[in-house]
Image 1: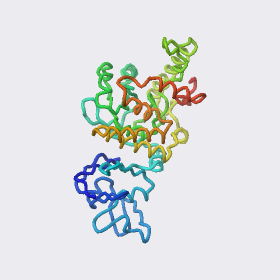
Image 2: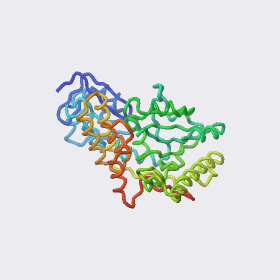
Image 3: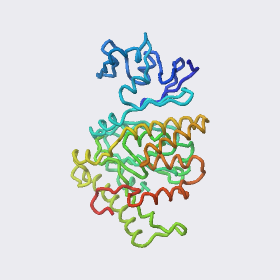
Length: 141
Length: 221
């Protein structure tokens, strides 16, 4: 069904997609929205992100792409990534797999992130490149 | 806790970045106002940084060199399990345990200072192979749990309490070793700290297991 607004949470942030089509476990986006939220683009050789292309399983192409629309949920599951939807299907999380995260960590290059400080100003870890960084967690709880 | 360390070392091309694993708007603010840190203090309401680095508790720290390379993966930052032996009524600690706890903290702080002074020459800056061997093992259950936590927090922020809390509980079941997920979820219905009877029950259930995983550093208890 068509929700007035679907929110998709990914590594790249929160995306509000006006005309996403939710049908059970499928989340259909326009090619442009899919690229914006997930970085993946449909090409003749399959679905591609940067240099990486994933061929679609033969005979199952219809599960992933129809016309100009891409089922980003099917793509995530195909890649072994966590794909979650709220009960109503109006909020989705398309996360990265533990395999991807582990691989990134094994390079020992600290994964970048951007978070706000108390006044709302965003800071990226990479802003502090050139210094030794002691990155430490705490909590009020 | 880190202000003195930061002030002592700031001139040596060093920065502390503190990340609060606090999901509710405003929870971290009084602490930041009281401590007046001059280093950046960020707020990570969906625990995204924890997911990236495999953080499961606070305080855990990651040491990152000038080139953005991890030289010590996530580990307890000078914290020790001594608090488990304190008298829960008086909050007093047996002398021996207090000594070990203070020792863990000062040993750890000395190690940070040594690294800042000596860089890769410091025995505490792990060479690449060793740093890799110290990386936390991430499982698909952990990745799913972090995604559930994110979905739950998003729903809570948008007033969908029942479903939000359900995702948080499920996240904690999937990733029971994460005290960040459990404590943040446990705190959802409370106002104060999550150090309630449920917290102590869960800590006691660890038995011989550590609350803060042991740190591979000479002199650490």
